[in-house]
Amino acid sequence: MRALDSLDELDRKIVVAMQHDGRASWRAIAEMVGSSTATVTRRGQSLLSSGVIKVAVNPALGAAGQVDSFLIRINCAPGTQLMVAEQLVAHDDVRFVTVVTGQYDIIAELVVKGGATNYPHLLEELQSIDGVERWRSDLVMHIYKVTFDWGRQLFADTLSLPEISSDFEHVAEPEPCSPVHFDSSDWKIIDALRDDGRETFQAVADRVGMNESSVRRRFERLRNAQCIDILTLVPAPALGMGAETLLTVKVSPSQMDAVARELAKHPAIRYLAATLDENALFCEVILPSTNELYSFITSTLSRLDGVEGWTASMELLFLKRGFIETPWWRSQVAPPA
Image (cartoon, rainbow, N blue to C red; front, side, top):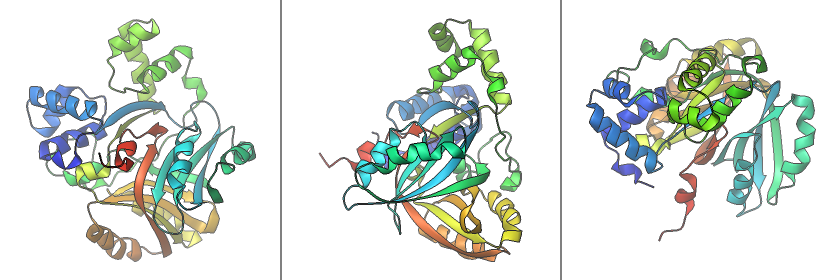
């Protein structure tokens, strides 16, 4: 994979623009970053082919029917963390997997089709993975924020990104989707875009046996209904972000919603949800360094009325996000040549 420290400012601006819209044309991205279409096309294609970024399309949660999500915290036998994490990555119902510091070794999210009553059917399979010593699960009650364009905090004043209001004050919670929005042709289109979210509509049409205009129309309908997620995956260090942290924030029950809505406004918050256990909020914050993390904790988090305390884990290795395996994690743990 291309060295992450080889990305210059223009590369990083292209990445941030693609985080905002992974299917934007090279011309549109060039307008966002203030460069020529030819330069942006060459640089963007290099970023994709080298595995620095990956664009994928997935159905939104609930697209195939009722689901419930569980936050999973795992302790592993010494030396087995990567083996356990790799098996979790391979499981279709696991949405994200990360190896962390702190009191746990792995944190993951398990999305249970059919709702929480079906969770016990998955427990025996997953808890029997060699190396798993302790398994703690917590129901995700409400998701306040999921975003894949967290990199915009780096260039908020210099990039022309549409549909982003000033100071990140407008935060849209994920809308539920429903199977009624899909038919068999829609699913074929999504499947064709899962591995390469920038595939042209014509190429998708050729693969699924439809005409290009039908594929385009169906895709835009699903997108406007918020029934698909367009993910641009990138390792945070590629954007110079060195502090990826998972926080479990304990909050006074009467102020849970108010605290969550204030936190959701912060551009560094990528994911934010309310969990069932211990009247807590679970959030992922991505910042350039530990100094910025310290500032966020002392100047923002600790000053919110209702916050009673928190525990935290630094993310060491992200293996899966948004149901998509990250293309870089294996090279990050490979022994030096």
